[in-house]
Image (cartoon, rainbow, N blue to C red; front, side, top):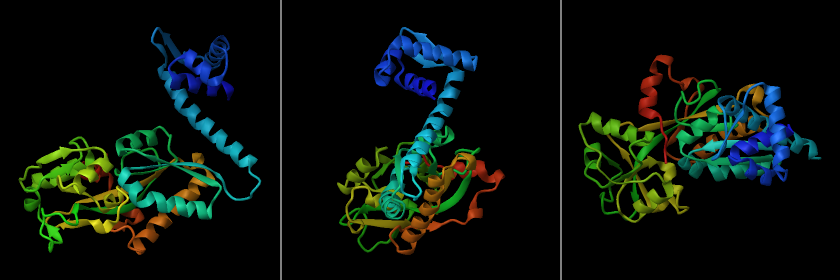
Length: 332
């Protein structure tokens, strides 16, 4: 275990000298430990050069498994040290920014009250990065927008979000009495959208193309807070799930969310988890409580514009390619 810890630190530091300082161990002793590890594995694990140290292909494979093993060891030691009988442990949950806006605080408050021994580490990132972390086993749980993000891991349908046109409450761009808008009207407005490489932007473009309309964005922003600040400042409208109105921590009443009357723009959310044999008891509890919190938020109308999906709502295999094209979201 000590050798694995040293190895992980070297890969992450990219240098033996940096790793030795982080580990408080002399560099010759560190090199000796790595030589022993490579002898035991029977394969070269590190490549040394004037630029530093990097992992070989075999080393990369060992690195990802070693990180998981060390994390599990930390959880085991943490459980052993606790005197209370309650379930405890650290759970890494990946969520995109808009999901965090709606779910983050309620979930943490719920878990702290019911399972104080569980430490929830919320990893907020673009879904493309979360997908990569999920496939590498670096997250216990992740809410993603593709049914094929990590084909080797358990996945279940979670919820479906409707996309809305969002403007400030006092905006003059859309008449105050309007509650919906057409794509043709929307195409004439200044729009602030994610960049073209993002799934949410691709979803929007598909619907505009269907109506032979052009998406003419006045700004392309891949930061949710900055995007919503620009919308609040009157620079343009945006198209987002309703949860985006919580991004600036102001009252949802300060925004108007208009439905798109002639297009069905939705985003499906899927819950991924590690394989059952790798999933800790704490992670199983978080997975179950997460679904409970979502259902409660929807029933209390505290998370609007969403509906729960049934477990069998996963797309059929022959539909996956089309499904991911239209709904996959590396969102902001």
